[in-house]
Length: 170
Image: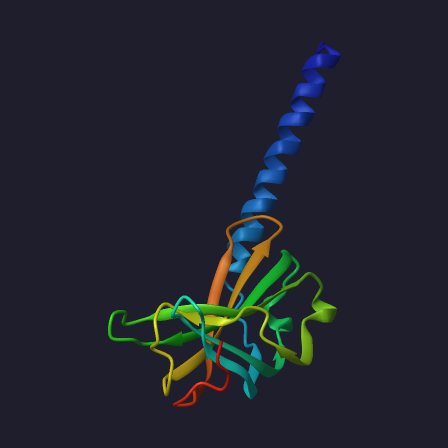
């Protein structure tokens, strides 16, 4: 006859194997989710475009954004981290990326929204390379699952050109 300790050990082992199997299945099934998100971002206004005292260009702007991120959510999604990045080229770097806005969506019901907001973070370039520069806006997302690996993706949205001269002096 088996003792109580042996029986508890058997139950714990079976529970651990079942939990590991469920976690592996959740991670495996997330690979088949192909999100079809919709997003649109428009620069409404350049609030400030100036040269900082240290010589770097700084841009603050207002954005009009509409996003439907519901397709990023599955039963295994804990939250989605989404951010908007500005991408541009300079003579010294072929790709410069600066985060302008970010948001954490924790519920599928709140994954579709429209907002008009100033940029959370200014677009700052190390130097005076932004005047007249063409800038692309790219939406990036990171899906944080309950179990399994983190999934990331990105979507190019729109382009705009910065003015040829500063709007404010410092």
